Length: 102
Image (cartoon, rainbow, N blue to C red):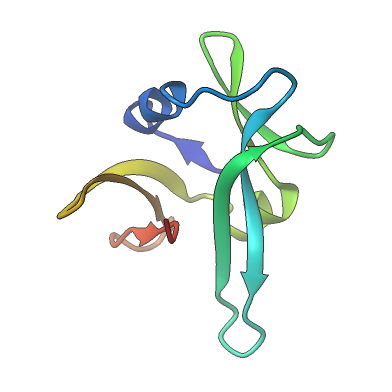
């Protein structure tokens, strides 16, 4: 399971998506040689096997099962960059956040 901090949840709340869709975290590619997985944050339809992150009783983010398994124990948090706030995925055993590529 991936944990989402309160700061990241507040950022997700600012995103307006069309009815019937949700904010999703999906895999884009997995590099066979390095084992690196890239993810994409976007709008899409919920799936039955998603990890659902709720805020105040409403679905806020759906994480594809494969992403949830790969990043199990990680934390999605708001990180400050030179370009402004961004989202980072912090692995459970390391202190350096990995950016989501956007």
